[in-house]
Every structure is written in C-alpha cells, then in structure tokens.
Amino acid sequence: MKGAGDTRALRRAYAGDAWWSAAVVLWLITGVWQLMSGSEKVVNYYSTELGFFIKMALFVAVVALEVWPTTTVVRWRFGRAEPNVRDAGRIEAISYVQCALVIGIVFAAAGMSMTTADSPSSSTPVAQEPKPTRAEAAGEVERIAPSGSATVTNADIALLTHEIAMPLRGIDPDSLRSSFDAPRSGGLRRHEALDIVAPRSTPILAAAKGRILKLFTSVAGGLMIYATDSSERFILMYAHLDHYAAGARDGAPLERGQLIGYVGSTGNASAAAPHLHFAILRSADVKHWSKGNAIDPLPVLRAAEAADHAP
Image (cartoon, rainbow, N blue to C red; front, side, top):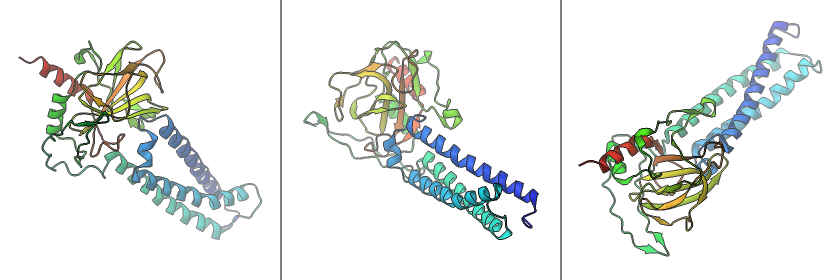
C-alpha cells in the first residue's frame, strides 16, 4: 500500500481480512462439529492425543495474531482511523506468520491420522502371539502386556481371521457391502467401519473372546462397547446399541458369541434405519481404548466365515 489513497490495495486488504475471519469461524464450527458429533472418535481420544494439543495451540496462536489486524482493518473500513503504510506492513508480516502456523496445523493433523506415536515402521517384526493366563479375579480377565505396535501386518490379519466371528447371528458376510472408505463429515474423514443393518433389538454377540474395555456413550456413536480379542492386539467397537445385555460392565470377560447388547439407532444413526456400527482397530496398547489403526471388518469376517466352513 502506497498510502491512504491507494484504494486498490485497501480493497485487497479488506478482502484478505474477510477471508481470514471466515476461515477462523469455519475452523471453529467444523472443529466443534467433528469433536462432538461428526466423528466416531470419542472425547477421550482427543484428550490423550499430543497432536490434538499441538493443533489447538497453533490455532489459538492464529486467532490471537488475528485480533490486532482485524480491529485495525475494521477501523480503516469505517473511517475511524487513517490507513497507513507502516500498519499495512505489519499486517502483511503477521499474515505470513499465520500461514506458517496453518501449515503446522496441517502437519499436526496428518500426524494424528497416521498415529505416528503408536506406529513403528511396517518392517517391525511381529511379536509371537501372547499366551495369556485366564485366571479371573473378581470376575475380571488378567491383563496382557501391550504389543507396543499398531502396525497392521499379514500375521495380524491371519490371527484376527482365526479369532473373529459375525457379531449378528444369521447374516452372511458375503451379502454385505463394505462402507469402510465411505466419506463422512462432508468428506473430512472416512467411515472406517462396517454398518450391519438389522431390526431393532436384534441380539449383538461378542465377535471374539476377550474382555470389555469400556461401556461408553457418545453423541455420534450412542451406546457403545469397546472390547478386545483374546490377544489384546485388537479393539472391537460396537456402536448405536439400543441397550446393553444384562451383566455387561467394564472389565467383564467375554466368550465369542456371548450376548453383549442389542441393535438400535442411538447416537447420530437414523431412527428409521437401526444398525450395528462395527469397527476393528489394531492397538499398540488397549488401555487407550479408542485409539488404533482401523482395519476393514468385512474382508476379515468373510475370510473367517470361509475358514469355518472349510473342509
């Protein structure tokens, strides 16, 4: 800007300020939506994720840096202050810093999506399948040492195929269609689960032997169950339940095929389309019961069904 009379430069400054303000508002709206109702991940996931705190710190810095430029440009726009080259230069410099912070937000978000903290290189050898004792104290299953890796390998898929069964009786997995890669939240994320449509109150069975990690209620998933398989490498998540089975509680042991709940439409599911939202995560440590690398359940369920019927 050459001076107060440089109207072309002022128009560009006003337009840039308007776009920045709109971006901040959009980030706030989509962030709250994603956290509270647009994501299958629960609040506990964000409260333990370092990348989330980095993103939020960078976002707060962007907003804080925007306060003075916005108020200055508004005063120029309404004639309460005279535009000047010095302040215009400062606003330009602040914009460059904000752009750098936004790039940092993108990298932090990418780090969260890759779960880098829990995922070593895919060449990491897979530990031998744990051979846990099943001594029960106070009705709870003895804990197994965490695997330390969330990397999904062929050995994992083979183990899961041996462990798992359909969570709804009488449904052929070959009749289902995968929605694992289907977009959600306006294309901001993938579904990363399998929806199995069934009448309300259809019994839901434990897909694998293991234990209940957490009975949870969220805005998106409604009534939910997070459980493990017997190796405690995998987290099995059941969502949109109508109600839990009697005796379901955190830490309770599970046998494959055991009744755990009933199909419903709680959370953000349509009341006209009750279904089971079934997800599988490869976990580095199941104490973080909402974190892990997602595995498409349908190919695993089909392979398990074929193995059960093999001669």
